[in-house]
Length: 242
Image 1 (cartoon, rainbow, N blue to C red):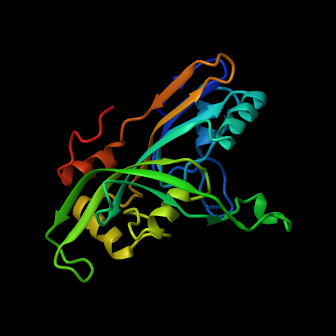
Image 2: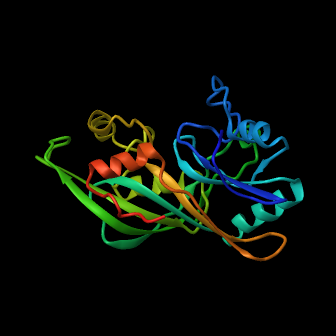
C-alpha cells in the first residue's frame, strides 16, 4: 500500500518510496511496479500524475483524479506557481546558502525521444539551497584523509529534468547515491557504512493553490526510514522537522 498524504474529490498525494517508477519507462522496461498502476488499484479509480519524481527520489508525489484537474495543476507547475522543497545529502560542504543559476540542456522523456523536432537548446534553470548540517568522517575516500558531507534543503524554481542532480554536480557537490551524476566511490562508501544504496534525495513538501477552491495546500512527507537512518548515522537526528 502506498501511504496517502492527502485526498479529496480531485487530488491525491502519496509518499513515493525510493526505487519506484512513477509510470512505465522504456529505460526500465524490466520494471513491473509503477506508482500510477499501484495507486489506481489501491483507490479504485484512474489517476494522472501532475509532476514527476525520479525513480530514486522519495517523497511527495501528487496526482489528479481527472484530466481537467491534471491539466490545470500541470500548468501551475509550468508557471512556477508550486513551491517544491527537497532535502539531499551531498558530498563536500557548500556555502550556508546560495543560488545555482545554470542553464541545462533539455533531457527528453520517452515520448519526446520519438520527436525529431524537440528543442535541444539549454533552458534557464535556477535552484536555491540552504545548508542544514555538516559532517566530517574519518575515512579517506578520495585523496583527502577525511570525507566531508552536508545536508541541504533545496528549492528548484524551475522544473528541468534531473535539475537538482545536475545542478549539484555542476557545483561539485553531487548527491550521494546518484549513479548517473554522482561519485561512485562515495556512493559505495555510504552503502558500506549505512546499508542504504539509494539516492539520498527526497521531496519533503509541496505548496500550491487548490485548482478548484484556491485554498493553499501544504503537502508534506516525512523522510523515509532508510533516508532517516542515514541522517541518524551522521548525527543529524532532529535537524529536519515534520
